[in-house]
Length: 74
Image (cartoon, rainbow, N blue to C red):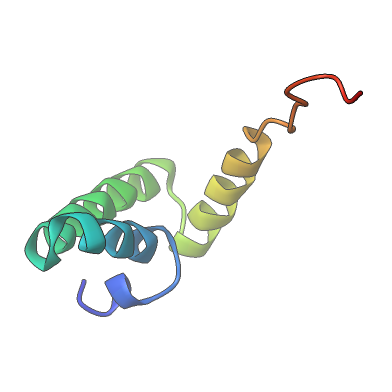
């Protein structure tokens, strides 16, 4: 966990986001919990971390909505 929270990826992103807001101990605990959830879903789906991460990124990017204009351009 100590190494993974410093690496790029969803666990490290979670840690760095919470580190500023909640502090080191809470950020580490929250990142560890998120890692446990990821491991559970990888185990359940029978995927390696790389396969699961690629599938997750594909799903996240497919949910992104295109930008909409807020008003008419006059």
